[in-house]
Length: 427
Image (tube, rainbow, N blue to C red; front, top):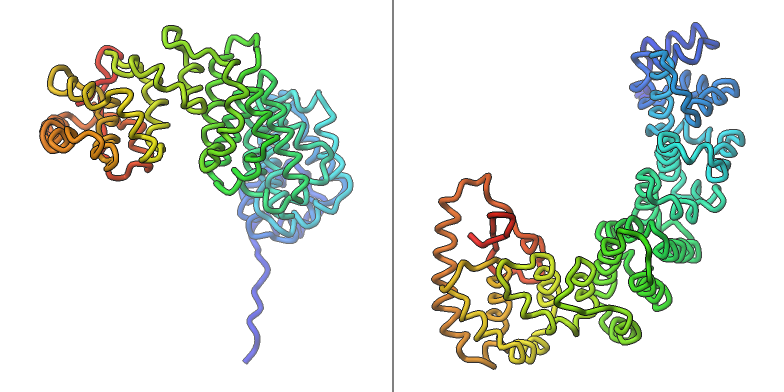
């Protein structure tokens, strides 16, 4: 018996390089076999790409955007980025130890001519992510000031994507102090006009990796986020910025109600809770300042419904403790208001879900016995009628309610609605 020895990978490109070790770079990088040869980590190609001369050409293509019209040059630039961001451990092992290559990436955050070009920024981010995966995050630490730089330029999609990957895929490899400093850099950037992108990116990263929330659930970090939510801004997009920050805060305060109760009183006087002057920021603020929801319940029952306001209110009520729902339902006279609407007008999905939240809460039902007969009578009859209409409705006209994606009330029936004259109505 002899041990099996795999044969070296060979194709037309490897044969060409063996016969022409000094071949023209553009000829090699645009060869039809370039990508399978890289994937198979063929050493003739790896050795060719990592010569000093060819690395110089590769770096020039990665960090330049000369608007060449020559199709060969255009393809060579595109393939260079593709090759150096492909999974090829033998290539990565060499370039991550190459001083010229590393210095080029270190210089990027200090070169406005480079990072102000979104195409070059994309090349940088794509290859940096690949090398970070190969080095288990250590390549990121070689680029001084990378995290504050990415936070400052988060409006660029490539920066935002790389930051998301850092937070989700590499955070466990970062030293605790570096991860904390990254979180501080990000929340400090919430005070800038790029706050919308920062908040959205952090929120998406936490949804992708829930354990990341603990990094941002520190009192000092939450205080900075609260400051950013209520600060005066001159941007015309201020309501959208505040909305996204409030949604992030709601996510971070989940399972941290004690911190919310400690911080909220310090900021209430900086927020205008005016039911007669609604914008998306006012609605979203209720996700954090939930004590003010009673002030907006009259609006909840208005027709046509205020869609985002109602969704924000329901977002809180879905998670409210059973015992806390009892005084709320009593003070707001929810049984009387909901039962009055049933059967007298076309019911919107928000009121239907509120009815289910109440009817499925045993403490609320015990507090008002009318819920027993109402749940088995009007609610059951309406649900049956609605399902019948839904069954006969063409599938393409049906939209799912956002509440269908919230698993906080798994026993609640699904809610469906369609748009009629730009108003969401229940089927």
